[in-house]
Image (cartoon, rainbow, N blue to C red; front, side):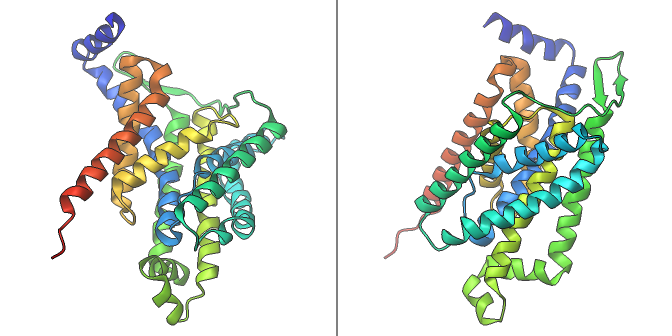
Length: 303
C-alpha cells in the first residue's frame, strides 16, 4: 500500500510524469485499436466472436521476427506479415469459420477457442516459449531533462498503424468489396438478394481481419515482446474495445483503444507492471457490467 501511495504522490509532485504515461498509452493503444478494428469487422459482418484474435496478432509478430532472423529488414516484416496472415486467415475460414457462421454463439466461441489453442501450440513448437523482440537499433528522443522519452521505434510503429488503418478505411468506403462488406453487415439476406456473394464477402472479411492482426503483431514485435501464449491478452483487449465502442463505430474503436492504452499505463505505474494483465480483465468486466445496465435501462415493456 505504501508503494501505491508513493507512486500516486509522484504523479502529483511531478506532473510531467503524466505526460510520459499518456504518450506511452497512446502509442500502445493505437496497436490495440488496430487489432480491435479487425475484430469489429468479423463480429459485425459475420457475427463471429473470434477468440483467436490475439493469436493472429502474435503469429504476425513471429512472421516479422523470423524474417529479421534471416537477414531481412525489420520494416519489411509489416507487409510480409499482412500477406502471410491473409493466407492463414483464408485457410482458417475455409476449414473452421465457414462451418460456424450460421451456428449458435457457443459453437462459434468453442471453434475459435480451439483455433486459438492450436495456433498457440504451433507457434510454441516452431519458435519456442521464450519471449522475442526485434531491435530496430533506433535512438530514443528525450524531453524535459530525460523524464519524458519517446523511442523512435514506437513512433514509427504508431505511424505505420495509422497508415494501415487509413488504408483500410479508404478501401471500405471506395471499393466495391468494401461496399459489399458494409451491405452484408447491415443485412446479409438482402445482400444476397441484391446479387452479392456473401460467402466470398465472409472469406474476404476474415482474411482481412487476420491480415490486419498480422500487421499489428509485426509492429508490436518492434516495440514490445511476443510469446506464443500472449495472444489471450490481446484478445481480451480487443473485446474490451469493441464492446465499449460498439460495432461499426470506427471513431469509437480508436478512442477506446487509446483509452485502454492510457488506462493500463496508469495502472501499471500505480500498482506495478505485474498487474497490467489484471487491469485488462478488470476493464472487460466493467465494460460488460456497464453494457448490461445500459440494456436494462433501454429495455421497454411490451403491452
